[in-house]
Image (cartoon, rainbow, N blue to C red; front, side):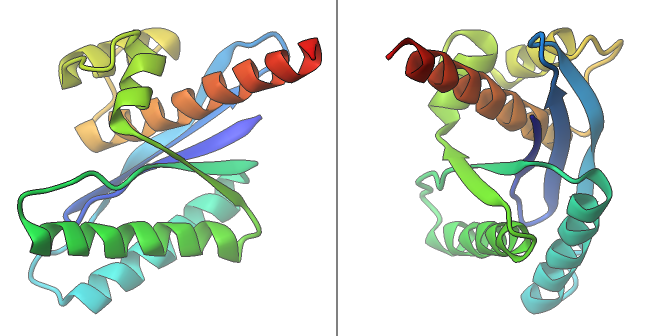
Length: 166
């Protein structure tokens, strides 16, 4: 299974493509971040996110897209903008006929590190270890997106094993 993880942000939207082989090995295929110009209007930034994610989907051909669920923020304006980026990410996936899975920050950290309150540096370290990377993926948004993809792959594997037993 090939998963595209997306870490939505209003300045940087991270992406990471991870494939899980038949023997459960995780393989890093691509990662990076879509950099958005804060000087541009929000509609133009959203257009760039849609365009770039569509290209990433077309070139990497994932089976599913995984994104982080909405988190609560003290700043309502920032939360609304983040929600708009998430909506565009979902649109990019749906437009390509892909299922979208959503995960809480707690479940992502638990899946990758084994502890839901793990520090960002611990998540980045474990992403590099799980994908057998020589260095921690940069920027941090890319590492977060890879963690989201790994979370989905771990969750899908667990659910498949549970349904096979019943």
